[in-house]
Image (cartoon, rainbow, N blue to C red):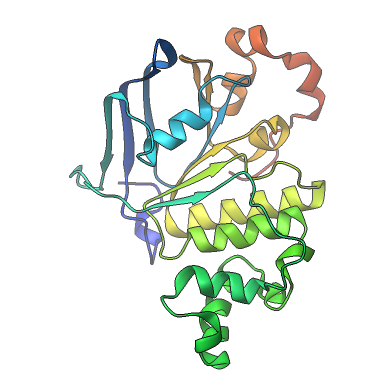
Length: 260
Protein backbone atom coordinates (compact mmCIF):
# COMPACT_ATOMS: atom_id res chain seq x y z
CA UNK A 1 0.00 0.00 0.00
CA UNK A 2 1.27 3.55 -0.80
CA UNK A 3 2.79 5.04 2.31
CA UNK A 4 0.14 7.69 2.92
CA UNK A 5 -2.95 6.07 1.41
CA UNK A 6 -4.63 5.30 4.74
CA UNK A 7 -4.46 8.94 5.89
CA UNK A 8 -5.31 10.55 2.56
CA UNK A 9 -8.83 11.99 2.24
CA UNK A 10 -8.49 12.99 -1.44
CA UNK A 11 -5.85 10.66 -2.86
CA UNK A 12 -4.50 10.97 -6.38
CA UNK A 13 -5.50 7.38 -7.23
CA UNK A 14 -2.11 6.66 -8.76
CA UNK A 15 0.26 4.23 -7.07
CA UNK A 16 3.11 3.93 -9.55
CA UNK A 17 4.24 5.26 -12.93
CA UNK A 18 6.34 2.69 -14.78
CA UNK A 19 8.70 3.80 -17.54
CA UNK A 20 10.16 0.78 -19.30
CA UNK A 21 12.74 0.53 -22.11
CA UNK A 22 11.84 4.11 -23.00
CA UNK A 23 13.59 5.76 -25.97
CA UNK A 24 12.96 8.86 -28.09
CA UNK A 25 14.51 9.48 -31.50
CA UNK A 26 14.04 12.62 -33.60
CA UNK A 27 15.27 11.89 -37.08
CA UNK A 28 18.70 10.37 -36.65
CA UNK A 29 19.18 12.02 -33.25
CA UNK A 30 18.88 9.82 -30.20
CA UNK A 31 17.33 12.04 -27.50
CA UNK A 32 16.74 9.38 -24.85
CA UNK A 33 17.74 5.73 -24.78
CA UNK A 34 16.51 2.76 -22.76
CA UNK A 35 15.21 4.59 -19.66
CA UNK A 36 13.70 2.40 -16.93
CA UNK A 37 12.08 4.04 -13.89
CA UNK A 38 9.37 3.48 -11.31
CA UNK A 39 7.88 6.70 -9.92
CA UNK A 40 5.91 6.16 -6.70
CA UNK A 41 3.03 8.05 -5.13
CA UNK A 42 3.65 10.43 -2.27
CA UNK A 43 7.16 11.19 -3.50
CA UNK A 44 8.92 14.11 -5.14
CA UNK A 45 11.18 12.73 -7.86
CA UNK A 46 13.66 15.27 -9.22
CA UNK A 47 15.13 14.88 -12.70
CA UNK A 48 18.59 16.41 -13.10
CA UNK A 49 21.19 16.45 -15.84
CA UNK A 50 23.14 18.79 -18.12
CA UNK A 51 21.48 20.95 -20.78
CA UNK A 52 20.35 18.83 -23.70
CA UNK A 53 20.17 15.67 -21.57
CA UNK A 54 16.54 14.94 -22.54
CA UNK A 55 14.86 15.98 -19.28
CA UNK A 56 12.05 18.01 -20.85
CA UNK A 57 11.63 15.36 -23.55
CA UNK A 58 10.79 12.83 -20.84
CA UNK A 59 8.12 15.10 -19.35
CA UNK A 60 6.64 15.87 -22.77
CA UNK A 61 6.45 12.16 -23.53
CA UNK A 62 4.47 11.67 -20.30
CA UNK A 63 2.17 14.44 -21.53
CA UNK A 64 1.74 12.61 -24.85
CA UNK A 65 3.57 15.23 -26.91
CA UNK A 66 6.40 12.96 -28.13
CA UNK A 67 6.39 9.68 -30.00
CA UNK A 68 8.50 7.11 -28.19
CA UNK A 69 9.38 3.45 -28.14
CA UNK A 70 9.07 1.37 -25.01
CA UNK A 71 6.26 1.61 -22.50
CA UNK A 72 4.79 4.12 -20.07
CA UNK A 73 2.06 2.79 -17.78
CA UNK A 74 0.16 4.20 -14.83
CA UNK A 75 -0.92 1.82 -12.06
CA UNK A 76 -3.46 2.18 -9.27
CA UNK A 77 -3.14 0.68 -5.80
CA UNK A 78 -4.46 -2.73 -6.93
CA UNK A 79 -1.99 -2.64 -9.88
CA UNK A 80 -4.76 -2.05 -12.43
CA UNK A 81 -3.72 0.24 -15.28
CA UNK A 82 -5.09 3.78 -15.59
CA UNK A 83 -5.51 4.25 -19.34
CA UNK A 84 -5.99 8.01 -19.24
CA UNK A 85 -4.49 9.46 -16.07
CA UNK A 86 -5.11 13.09 -15.26
CA UNK A 87 -1.80 14.96 -15.41
CA UNK A 88 -1.19 18.39 -13.90
CA UNK A 89 1.57 20.45 -15.51
CA UNK A 90 3.43 23.59 -14.46
CA UNK A 91 5.66 25.09 -17.20
CA UNK A 92 8.96 26.82 -16.64
CA UNK A 93 7.51 30.23 -17.38
CA UNK A 94 4.51 32.05 -18.80
CA UNK A 95 4.64 35.13 -21.01
CA UNK A 96 2.74 38.03 -19.43
CA UNK A 97 1.82 41.17 -21.36
CA UNK A 98 3.01 44.07 -19.21
CA UNK A 99 0.14 46.21 -20.52
CA UNK A 100 -2.55 43.71 -19.60
CA UNK A 101 -4.94 44.66 -16.76
CA UNK A 102 -5.70 40.96 -16.15
CA UNK A 103 -5.87 40.05 -12.47
CA UNK A 104 -5.13 36.71 -10.84
CA UNK A 105 -8.87 36.26 -10.37
CA UNK A 106 -9.56 36.93 -14.07
CA UNK A 107 -6.76 34.60 -15.19
CA UNK A 108 -7.82 31.66 -13.04
CA UNK A 109 -11.52 31.98 -13.82
CA UNK A 110 -10.86 32.26 -17.56
CA UNK A 111 -8.82 29.05 -17.29
CA UNK A 112 -11.47 26.99 -15.52
CA UNK A 113 -14.73 28.40 -16.92
CA UNK A 114 -16.61 27.93 -20.17
CA UNK A 115 -18.04 31.42 -19.82
CA UNK A 116 -16.45 34.83 -20.39
CA UNK A 117 -15.19 36.43 -17.20
CA UNK A 118 -17.38 39.51 -17.67
CA UNK A 119 -20.53 37.37 -17.99
CA UNK A 120 -20.25 35.81 -14.53
CA UNK A 121 -21.47 37.31 -11.30
CA UNK A 122 -18.56 38.58 -9.25
CA UNK A 123 -19.56 36.57 -6.15
CA UNK A 124 -19.61 33.24 -7.97
CA UNK A 125 -16.30 33.96 -9.69
CA UNK A 126 -14.63 35.02 -6.46
CA UNK A 127 -15.79 31.91 -4.56
CA UNK A 128 -14.49 29.55 -7.25
CA UNK A 129 -11.15 31.32 -7.54
CA UNK A 130 -10.68 31.59 -3.78
CA UNK A 131 -11.08 27.83 -3.46
CA UNK A 132 -8.12 27.37 -5.80
CA UNK A 133 -5.96 30.05 -4.22
CA UNK A 134 -6.55 28.67 -0.73
CA UNK A 135 -5.05 25.33 -1.82
CA UNK A 136 -1.75 27.10 -2.47
CA UNK A 137 -1.88 29.59 0.42
CA UNK A 138 -2.26 32.50 -1.98
CA UNK A 139 -5.69 33.98 -1.25
CA UNK A 140 -4.05 37.37 -0.79
CA UNK A 141 -3.21 37.44 -4.52
CA UNK A 142 -6.86 37.42 -5.62
CA UNK A 143 -6.99 40.96 -7.01
CA UNK A 144 -3.32 41.39 -7.90
CA UNK A 145 -2.52 41.98 -11.55
CA UNK A 146 -0.56 39.17 -13.20
CA UNK A 147 2.06 41.62 -14.43
CA UNK A 148 2.80 42.66 -10.83
CA UNK A 149 3.43 39.15 -9.49
CA UNK A 150 6.90 37.96 -8.56
CA UNK A 151 8.22 34.85 -10.27
CA UNK A 152 7.43 32.76 -7.21
CA UNK A 153 3.88 34.12 -6.92
CA UNK A 154 3.16 33.42 -10.59
CA UNK A 155 4.41 29.83 -10.27
CA UNK A 156 2.16 29.29 -7.27
CA UNK A 157 -0.83 30.49 -9.29
CA UNK A 158 0.09 28.09 -12.11
CA UNK A 159 0.47 25.32 -9.54
CA UNK A 160 -3.01 26.07 -8.23
CA UNK A 161 -4.44 25.62 -11.74
CA UNK A 162 -2.54 22.34 -12.18
CA UNK A 163 -4.30 21.00 -9.08
CA UNK A 164 -7.83 21.59 -10.39
CA UNK A 165 -9.01 18.88 -10.31
CA UNK A 166 -6.46 16.90 -8.25
CA UNK A 167 -4.36 15.08 -10.86
CA UNK A 168 -3.00 11.56 -10.76
CA UNK A 169 0.47 12.88 -11.59
CA UNK A 170 1.99 16.37 -11.25
CA UNK A 171 4.79 17.44 -13.63
CA UNK A 172 6.93 20.51 -12.92
CA UNK A 173 9.29 21.75 -15.66
CA UNK A 174 11.96 23.84 -13.91
CA UNK A 175 9.28 25.68 -11.91
CA UNK A 176 11.74 27.58 -9.69
CA UNK A 177 13.83 29.16 -12.43
CA UNK A 178 14.32 32.86 -11.63
CA UNK A 179 12.67 32.69 -8.20
CA UNK A 180 14.41 34.36 -5.26
CA UNK A 181 15.51 32.43 -2.16
CA UNK A 182 12.41 33.18 -0.09
CA UNK A 183 10.19 32.22 -3.01
CA UNK A 184 12.12 28.97 -3.44
CA UNK A 185 11.52 27.90 0.14
CA UNK A 186 7.81 28.76 -0.07
CA UNK A 187 7.42 26.81 -3.32
CA UNK A 188 9.25 23.69 -2.11
CA UNK A 189 7.37 23.71 1.20
CA UNK A 190 4.10 23.97 -0.71
CA UNK A 191 5.01 21.04 -2.97
CA UNK A 192 5.87 18.96 0.10
CA UNK A 193 2.50 19.74 1.69
CA UNK A 194 0.62 18.90 -1.50
CA UNK A 195 2.29 15.57 -2.22
CA UNK A 196 1.75 14.45 1.40
CA UNK A 197 -1.87 15.64 1.55
CA UNK A 198 -2.92 13.94 -1.70
CA UNK A 199 -0.33 11.11 -1.74
CA UNK A 200 0.62 12.57 -5.09
CA UNK A 201 3.42 11.58 -7.46
CA UNK A 202 5.41 14.70 -8.36
CA UNK A 203 8.12 14.75 -11.05
CA UNK A 204 10.19 17.92 -11.23
CA UNK A 205 13.01 19.00 -13.52
CA UNK A 206 15.47 21.19 -11.64
CA UNK A 207 19.00 22.60 -11.64
CA UNK A 208 18.54 23.73 -8.05
CA UNK A 209 20.69 21.05 -6.42
CA UNK A 210 20.61 22.51 -2.92
CA UNK A 211 16.84 22.28 -2.58
CA UNK A 212 16.59 19.07 -4.59
CA UNK A 213 18.89 17.55 -1.97
CA UNK A 214 16.73 18.87 0.87
CA UNK A 215 13.25 18.18 -0.50
CA UNK A 216 13.34 15.37 -3.09
CA UNK A 217 12.71 11.77 -2.11
CA UNK A 218 14.36 10.40 -5.24
CA UNK A 219 16.71 11.85 -7.82
CA UNK A 220 17.07 10.76 -11.44
CA UNK A 221 20.30 11.70 -13.23
CA UNK A 222 20.05 11.43 -16.99
CA UNK A 223 22.19 12.40 -19.94
CA UNK A 224 20.35 10.80 -22.85
CA UNK A 225 20.37 7.62 -20.77
CA UNK A 226 19.78 6.82 -17.12
CA UNK A 227 23.04 7.37 -15.23
CA UNK A 228 21.93 7.21 -11.59
CA UNK A 229 18.73 6.80 -9.58
CA UNK A 230 18.27 6.82 -5.82
CA UNK A 231 18.08 9.07 -2.79
CA UNK A 232 19.68 12.52 -3.02
CA UNK A 233 22.79 11.47 -1.02
CA UNK A 234 23.23 8.41 -3.23
CA UNK A 235 22.98 10.30 -6.52
CA UNK A 236 24.91 13.42 -5.54
CA UNK A 237 27.81 11.35 -4.23
CA UNK A 238 27.85 9.00 -7.23
CA UNK A 239 30.69 8.72 -9.71
CA UNK A 240 28.26 9.49 -12.52
CA UNK A 241 27.24 12.80 -10.93
CA UNK A 242 30.87 13.80 -10.42
CA UNK A 243 31.68 13.16 -14.07
CA UNK A 244 29.13 15.79 -15.10
CA UNK A 245 29.04 18.15 -12.14
CA UNK A 246 31.32 18.76 -9.18
CA UNK A 247 29.95 17.47 -5.90
CA UNK A 248 32.73 19.23 -4.01
CA UNK A 249 31.64 22.59 -5.39
CA UNK A 250 28.11 22.28 -3.96
CA UNK A 251 28.67 19.96 -0.99
CA UNK A 252 28.88 22.74 1.65
CA UNK A 253 25.33 23.81 0.78
CA UNK A 254 23.89 20.32 0.89
CA UNK A 255 22.49 19.39 4.27
CA UNK A 256 19.95 16.69 4.95
CA UNK A 257 18.02 18.32 7.75
CA UNK A 258 14.58 18.54 6.21
CA UNK A 259 11.58 16.31 6.86
CA UNK A 260 10.90 14.58 3.59
